[in-house]
Image 1 (cartoon, rainbow, N blue to C red):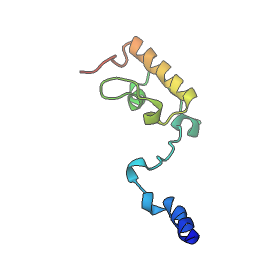
Image 2 (cartoon, helix red, strand yellow; image 1 turned 90 degrees about the horizontal axis):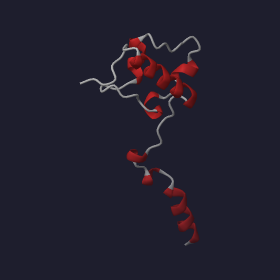
Image 3 (cartoon, helix red, strand yellow; image 1 turned 120 degrees about the vertical axis):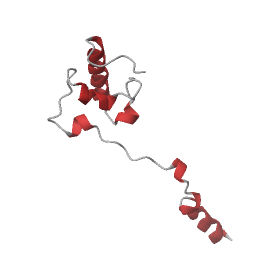
Image 4 (cartoon, rainbow, N blue to C red; image 1 turned 45 degrees about the vertical axis):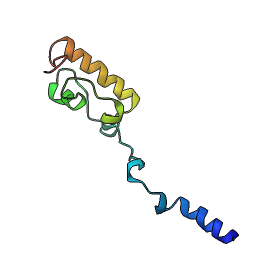
Length: 92
């Protein structure tokens, strides 16, 4: 009887409880950290479009995959580009 309980406990962490909905997501690597030659520039609109959505909002870290340091830099450069009208605040 004790062997069955132990076997059942061992199987709880196996494929019986596998649910793809709650799968652990693979961690994204910060593109700015991985490529040392990549420089974020507020004058380059094509480069900044990667970090904003179709409505013009800045994408969060979980979407961009940036680290906290570089996400702050992304936010600053997007706001600078908006201020001097390189990219619009909103897109209709």
